[in-house]
Length: 252
Image 1 (cartoon, rainbow, N blue to C red):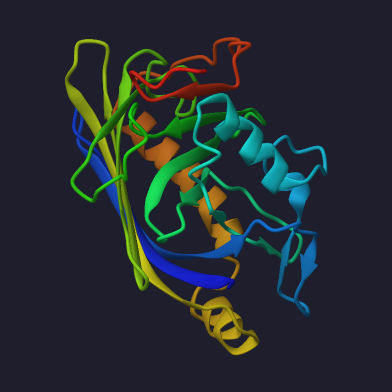
Image 2 (tube, helix red, strand yellow; image 1 turned 180 degrees about the vertical axis):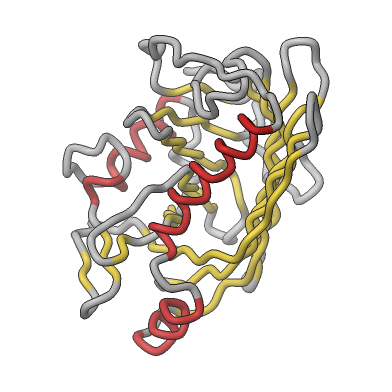
C-alpha cells in the first residue's frame, strides 16, 4: 500500500566548526511491483527515471538483481521505495531508501541510493552478513567511497541505523573521518500513513515546493560553511564502482 512519510531531517557537523540544521519534509513510500510513472493532479509526480539505474527500467528488477548478488533476494518478500516526489516536475533526492522486507514485514536490507549535486549517484547496501533481521539498535558500517559534500573528504566511513514499524520510520547515518572520529550526524525520523489525495494535498500545502526548498537549503548551508572558514574540497573523479555493501557482507 502506498504511504506518505512525514518526517524531520537533522544534520549536525561536529568539527572543525559546529554547524547544524533541521527542517520538516515529506516523502512517498511506494511498493515496487511493476511500477510505472505516476502523476497526481497539478502537484506531485513520480518518475522511474529518477531512481535505480535511471534508464526507465523496472525498479523492482533493478533492486532484486542487487539483492540476488548478496543472497538476500530469497528472503526479501517486498521492497518499498522511500523518496521525494517530483513537485511541479522538479526533484532532487539527496538519498532515497529501498526497504527490503521479509514475509513478516521485518527489515532484512536497505539500499541507500545517494545522489550528489554534480549529477552522480552511488548506492550502499546495508545488511547483516548472516542475513538476520535488522533490529533498531543495530549499527551497520560501510566505507565511504562517494563524494557528496564539497566540505568533507571522500575517505572515512558511515554508520547506518534503521528503525521501522507499521507507523514510524527512523534512519540515522553518522560519518566518521579517516582517523575514526565522528564528524557528522544525521537523522530522518517521522510517521507513515496512507497515501491519498487528501494526505498529499495536506503535505503539499504544509511544505510547499519542498523539493525546491531542499536544493536551496543545500546551497545555503554551503554558504554558511564557507563563511565559517570550512575548506572547500574539490570533487574527485567518481570511482567506477556504483554499489558498495556494509562490512562483512560479501557477494555470492
